[in-house]
Image (cartoon, rainbow, N blue to C red):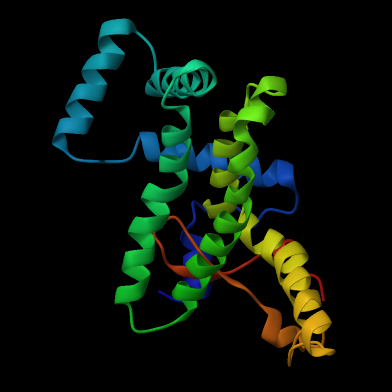
Length: 212
């Protein structure tokens, strides 16, 4: 599937031009996912649930998300649950990326794991942070979703704005000069490729490209 056709296939919603648009796109895609065909068992059981309680399926989904957030505040396995959110799906699609012949999707998830690893260092101070901010694991779970969801592409922004320049400066302090290509890439070389809901490759919207 080409980049152009893939963008059109994403529910016909234009590329996000702001954070608010991005989160609205995320919500729309979430609702679309809930009403999609996920097999006979899902369709039958969810329909029975709706008929029994007289509520739409998104109400139950919101309730489940709310219970998960509460558990990550008071539950003993909050850290495990949070990190599972940031590992399970990315690990699955990373394996799929490794199986493909191209390398663009490999780079997509390599960037995610780089950002994930960098920010996981903060977990060392988690207990101290939670004494002042008990919502730490909830906030981290939301942050991890922001990093890899195709509607937000947060890992690309953080990598190109924080991690890559920081590592480049560390290399400069060691060697006395910036690594080749860092800081002077032509715009055409800085077009980051992301993935859509079906793990197809798409070029990021202009507002989500790294700074020129």
